[in-house]
Length: 123
Image (cartoon, rainbow, N blue to C red):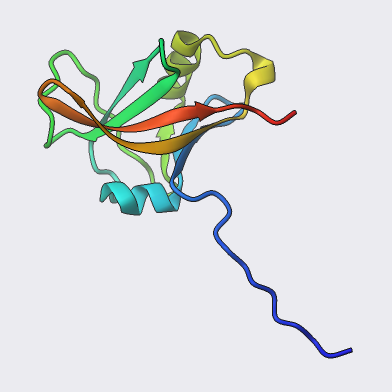
């Protein structure tokens, strides 16, 4: 039987995830799609009603009273941001890890948020 080459495709695509340690991570594809590099200052927001997270570069949006976070070289936005998002979205330990699929840009007045929506866990 001859060898057949494996077709390896990207697994995650453009997505954001929150792991069991409550760290928010942007996938490599999401970092490229949003034009983010290591240590680019971003603002993260939460839409509790629709279970969405929004990300925007700080230089593109002047959001008053917003805390800035910077992704590290692996795409993590930090534990503090993740804990706040988990608390606001009321995600339980059973809901983690949680994946958020990229749905596009959403206009919220003066700010265009790059939006990620919670995907149901398949457990």
